Image 1 (tube, rainbow, N blue to C red):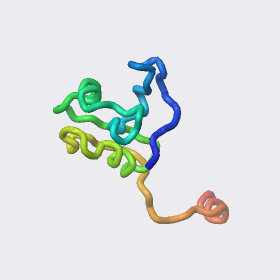
Image 2 (cartoon, rainbow, N blue to C red):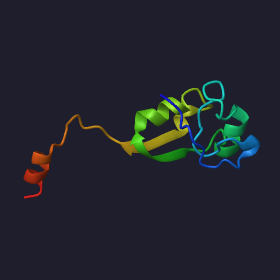
Image 3 (cartoon, one colour):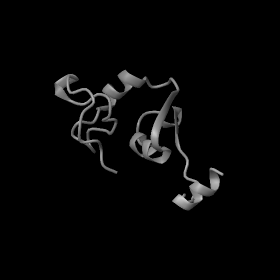
Image 4 (tube, rainbow, N blue to C red):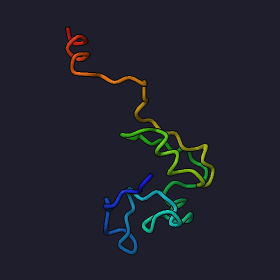
Length: 93
């Protein structure tokens, strides 16, 4: 999985991204060191992410962080189907 290439907040420390670069620095050059990550999210408080994509993607980004079971991600749930234009016509009648 690739990290975002643009920074949400280029004015962060050292001109690095603070909003979207949750990867560890060992994976992405704009990633957060563990101390910086814990400064934002603490080590013990539960964290809920409302994510616009697949939940699994956020869990992959957070993998290896301190106390990962405290992270809860709410996002897209794949149902294994494809909605075609014909299906949409049938569903809206």
